[in-house]
Image (cartoon, rainbow, N blue to C red; front, side, top):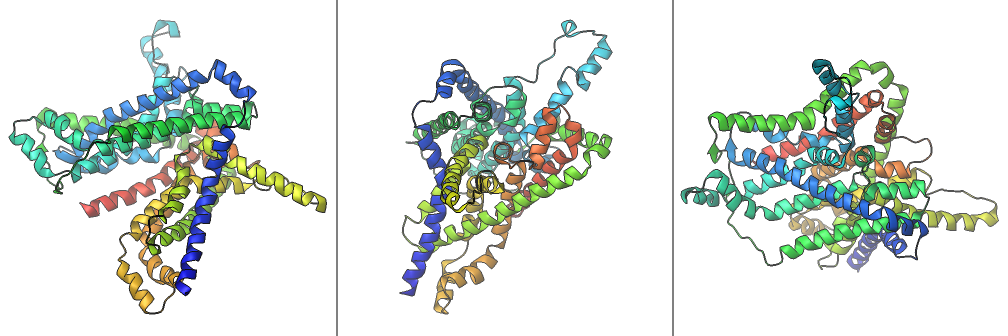
Length: 543
């Protein structure tokens, strides 16, 4: 009898968590289906189709450039031996620590008309005006594509390289015996077998690209993300912003459905015989140096150069950048990230433990519901969170007004809004990390605990949590880093006079003063390196 009561209690916890975290998405979908909005009708008749076209071109362009960078890098580091290969294996993941808006700001400073590159060119060649020479304009859609791809390509690189290492070693050897060159083997064997991994990585890159706000806003490229931001802050139309957000969700849904439809009849089966530390191809001479040069160029432009510029700014403007404001914003960012990490870990433990003790299929539903927020771009998430919170504020004020107490925007206008939004979006990260750790714990430990008379709560506390310490640490770190880097949701939901490091950098860059926020930008990058260190250690232990 006590077991049934206990299971019912865990079930209630899990379903409440799943329902609460999926509520913003439900409100957003409901609001987007409401009656016509004058603002939305005006946008639909004028510029909205341009926004949609730019968004689709941006996503396609980033995907193509990411493939052009990541697929050769993944193949080289997985299958080839060349100078510096071991170092490049982990170093090529470093750009993931660089938020897209920071690399965009750095390159804009470098390549603008008033930047050091064009100034040097005019001095060297004695050019007097822009009419005397041609130089590419980085603040364009192609420029935004390049900036975003430089940061996001490691997703595809890491996933593709892992897929290659998990492919049967004998298949590639068989292609060699059949006379296929390395290039032919790459296109006819490696790529087809890794298609699922490539598509999954490109889906993740597409979601991150659609979610990007600061880069396209700074480059004056109008996309659906900037449209949501401008509609809400410019026209104060929550309904129109919700409708545009609905279009973004529809694009994501159609893309995922097309990908699944394209693989409906495809199945790949292979015996596991992964690649060991020895390389398939040993590159010599010019081929070896071409591989090393390619890796160096990508790493230089994607990470080393932006970091060097930020370090130079931090040294030159140390007195202005190293101020009390920096410490205040760093503390506020740390506080929010730490609170969100603790909340997401606690909620994930409850939901995943319920999935473990309930044996049927339906226990997976609360976790899936709670994880849907990760697909929402930051601006869309902010709108989705504001809808239920403003409704609750209105109800709360109406209920307390007869008592002579009107709390105002108690939920939507305080730190609660930004914390709730971060929990909705980043819960999926914690859930995935803790769920994978739970799967490695033998069910026999649960049975042994029960046979000793321990309740399920004590089993979780005394048996599972000690064994989950690494997974919990990983989940907490990943959520913490994402909270530190998140910008669009923070811009829309932050309370009055509340700044994070990300919004602090954004404000200064908007005023063309990146130098004064260089230490804040470097802090975000340094914090972002922490999970990459653990990922690299984990990969070294598996190899």
